[in-house]
Length: 397
Ligand SMILES: Cc1cc2nc3c(=O)[nH]c(=O)nc-3n(C[C@H](O)[C@H](O)[C@H](O)COP(=O)(O)OP(=O)(O)OC[C@H]3O[C@@H](n4cnc5c(N)ncnc54)[C@H](O)[C@@H]3O)c2cc1C
Image (cartoon, rainbow, N blue to C red; front, side):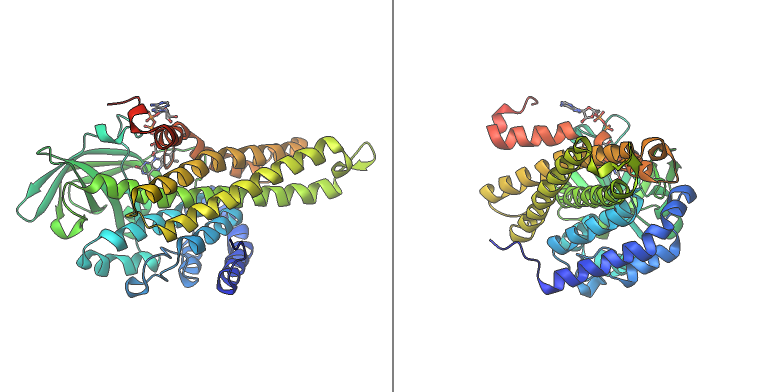
């Protein structure tokens, strides 16, 4: 067992931390208040190779391992506490790698390089107005046509609907086969005829949009199909494993940044004639938070390591090991990050409640992962229950 990062991993981690300090932190307020990630920030991310970094170099990425991508996700989460940049980062990384693995050669060649350059957006569309947790009951349908598919239905609470419309790009979209032959996983460009979007007003991660996508007989060419027709469900679930690991990493980065901000404050702010950090009531809280963040960080790095070692096609034992590791970290990282940001806000007293200190951005951003983004916490518990007790204990048919 070796916990040491390689020289290459450490150098890249430091480079992304510098990018976070020099580019993301100064832009944090602008990202949160302006409703978008400024183009110069996306350009800087692309220059560093951060966009869709696991995509192989022949399609414009850097062919990064899941471990290297996890390290970068931590740093992006640390750099922009609002989580908007982290969401952009992890969508491109998680779903870019899925497209690189399962997309047709034509789609990979024509689309992925522009995603890696930050000139097109790639997201995921599975959630529907009827619910996001129980994907098997989705209603959006894809009817087969002589040259591809025709989509009818609606997706909702989808990240990046505005970005995909403005920059170009679209979403990997899961749809039920109209003839009852399973599910198709299709890349659907947002600028397609018959597709309309609507943006929602969220409470956090304001720099990236969330909205709905309505499909009115949207035609999708056969070359936009991922994997085999009718077998898309498993591909989408595999992509979620990757995305959930990077989500957790971003939460860990945000928690570490909150602790750094908090520790600087504990050293300097005085109450009752002493720095706050001298009071055991606060020191113990710091110690508990640090220990929890540290534990979940290594849990997350192990999940990434497992993804590298046992790619999602692995045998049953390893499949279960990956499922348990990813569900565990997605279950623990967001609540620990939320609690850390909240506690540190309280060390600031009234100032913690202001926009000036900026921790509230983290609270609003991390909250998205508690309510459901990339799968709700109870869904992680259901996955763990299934893996620990067996499929026969699933409460649903
Ligand atoms: C900011 C944000 C961005 C998002 N971006 C995307 C995106 O890009 N693409 C996309 O497709 N979706 C996206 N989502 C949607 C997300 O995937 C869903 O919110 C999630 O899957 C839960 O679905 P739901 O909101 O419909 O809640 P529901 O499925 O209605 O569930 C409601 C609550 O009940 C819980 N629950 C459900 N079933 C059970 C059960 N059997 N036992 C116990 N508890 C249960 C859930 O965990 C949840 O807390 C985003 C969500 C947010 C908040």
